[in-house]
Amino acid sequence: MMSQTDSILNLLNIQDPNIKISACTNFSQAGVHEKLLSATLTYPVERCVNCGSTNIVQNGTRLTKMKLPSLGEQPLRMNLRKQRYLCRTCHHTFSAQTQLAPPRHSITRQAVHEIATLAKNSLPVKTISQTVGISASSVQRILYKDQRALVTPKELPTALSFDEFRSTKNCFSFICIDAKTHDLVALLPDRLSQTIREYFTNTYTLSERQKVQLVTMDLNAQYQTFVRRLFPNALIVFDRFHIVQLAGRALDHERLRVLKGINDHHDRNYKVLKSNWRLFHLAENQLETSQVKYYRGLN
Ligand SMILES: [Zn+2]
Image (tube, rainbow, N blue to C red; front, side, top):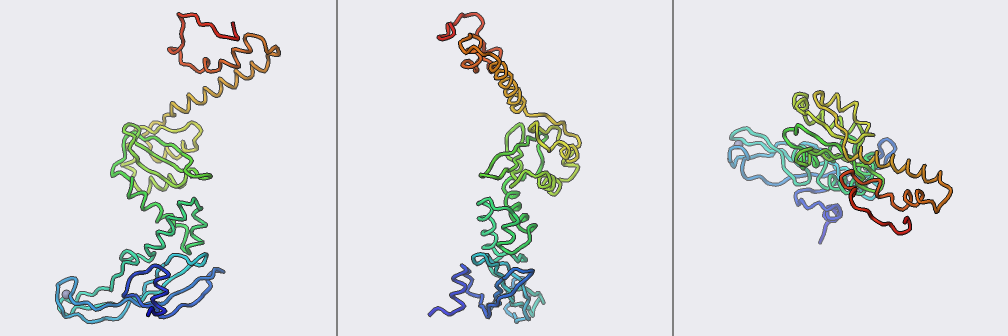
């Protein structure tokens, strides 16, 4: 038969049979109601992890405060008392291990998973932090860590390209690629100057950043000032695509202004400006200058 402890663990998807829950209490912290589980982690150890000796004795416990995924809206914590062991042969001491969280980490794998899931639903960091019950900076650290592991190259390319893209409905992300190879350099969850600045200063030393010679970016970007500080030797180059786009828009703006000034809608100039707008956007070498072409309606 399933004990109460087992059913709580089952409910929380904790599969470690060495964890036993002894109590569950409610408590309030800064106006937030949370649940706190008290539990122990212990199992028989046959050999010393250091010397292989079998002369092992239990040697007290160590309290670890674990962060579990929230239960609905309610943050959930666990005070886990871990068994300590002493090897009488080599005097090495060690703690009982669990898969619940990486060694020396208090945020469980399940909580990390919950944070990642909430982030995928494009919830702001502040909301995630309130739901899970850990600080916003911890949430950011967790979200960043995975992305860094994924993309951060050891050395910065000499030419970088910055861009932003709409990753979800209402959220922009920031992407940095190698301008020559188009390999991913960084993918950040938002495009705030602070996020980008911190990412580069935390990941690369100044001397590494000084090797960057070129940064291409959007014309309207607010990045210019901090890019000069981050990459002091880099030349900022505005993306050709964005310049062409701006020029195209300006041209259209002017075309429409002229079009609106012509009252006679049967006028040939009016028709050319209205229906043959594509002609105005062609590159010079794409224009046909030698052959005469007849346009219906324009005669
Ligand atoms: Zn030993």
